Length: 78
Image 1 (tube, one colour):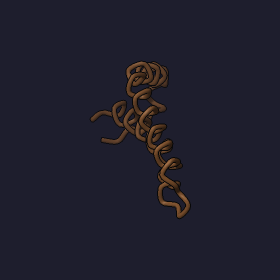
Image 2 (image 1 turned 90 degrees about the horizontal axis):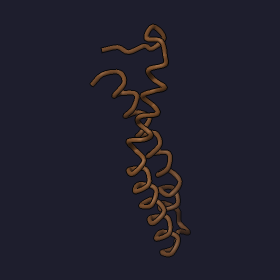
Image 3 (image 1 turned 135 degrees about the horizontal axis):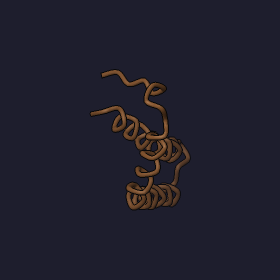
């Protein structure tokens, strides 16, 4: 995997994990009820579908930004 792929994967997973964090905390709470759990699950499903549909567009934007960075400023160790 090259530096660009690593950067993209890190960015993608960061977005997903940040979005999952709040519902995950709610699911672990003592006072979570079934309706709230269903709403949170539906919200996550909607987020993932939307994110998947936009992933190509998002990735292309990140690649354009990455290519504007001068290679000497990017530190990638293999």
